Image 1 (cartoon, rainbow, N blue to C red):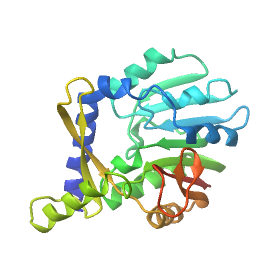
Image 2 (cartoon, rainbow, N blue to C red):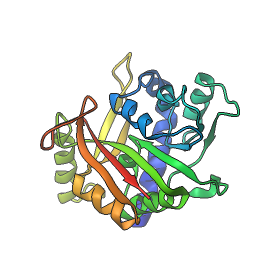
Image 3 (cartoon, rainbow, N blue to C red):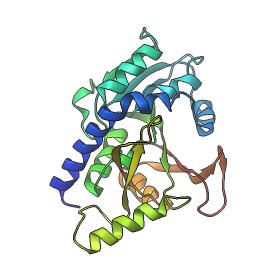
Image 4 (cartoon, rainbow, N blue to C red):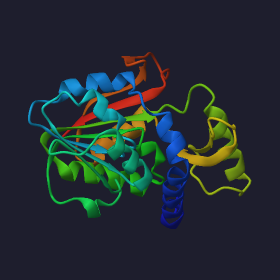
Length: 243
């Protein structure tokens, strides 16, 4: 994917989430089961960065830990929801920022960086590589980079990938072959409010990105209800890397 196309899609992702923020936030009040296990890798006093935090739902499983937490998201609207849900104090903060651009970063190092259902919204190989490089830069030695991505090769999602492939072959779409546009429908009316961009990852691709950033793979697996699944089954891909 050409860089100018990737930048346009990234701007579309931001605009889409600004548009759907209220409806999206209403559907993201419960943590995923995978998140419960992530907290076990943290120690008292750790500095934790939730990159692409949305409305701050990950903090639900972290709130009782003695950690310092920063939630960052490129949607101002979702950050506003996070601040309303979790009042800021010396233990937790939220700010607007982007995983592909560390202009918001003040040089602090973190013991853990989380990206929950975020990277699959980042278009193009170069921008995804930049996200991994940024994570490696802000991690403490020995720190963990923990993320989930949707498994788009199961359930209803392969149909969206096939639709993209056919349109790309016909010259009607400039996304990569394993990309997809998936509609977000209003919970009340069913109206399509946005077509969200997704990239469909494989375990091999995520493994390569981790290693290219100079990080070490700890775990990389398909997850079904928080448990490792066989073959490619499972709603999410969980990737845990270490610096």
